[in-house]
Image (cartoon, rainbow, N blue to C red; front, side, top):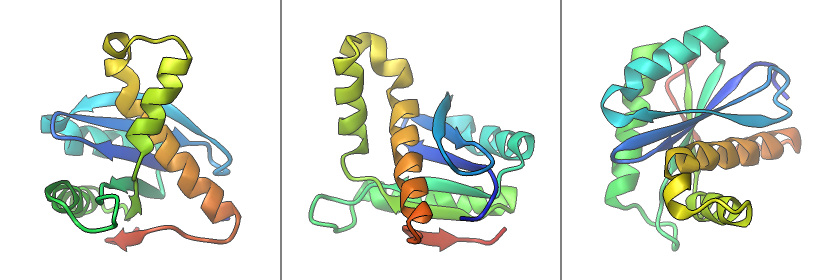
Amino acid sequence: MRPGIRIGVDVGKARVGVARSDALGLMAVPVITLARATAIEDLAILADQFEAIEFVCGLPVSLDGSDTASTVDARNFAVELSQATGVAVRLVDERLTTVTAQNALRDATHSQKSSRPVIDQVAATILLDNALNAERSGVTMGETVGDS
């Protein structure tokens, strides 16, 4: 496994959830939920702060694996993020991460209304954790945009 901090990104129309790994890539933790309008700039600051080696960005494909309007939006966001930061962005299938995050928060007795501010962070954490687990097992998930 490559050493270095990765930043998980769950891209939404209004908000962007952010998580980060530790330097050894052992675990992911929630960081912040950003406004979509300033997310690229804010992520550039976080990448510098954490000295990130890579962004792991969710790719929202449909359940049958086909592209949707959100898939195109995430790809465009990833290209813009890579160009703005000079950090590679790995796009990883995020099917059901938001549902998993909602279920986890519900199971932790958070109401849907009280979980709204953190749901995107939890989804980014689940996405990043899945990618880290795969990489530890020798599989690099997804496709890369840009280079570091």
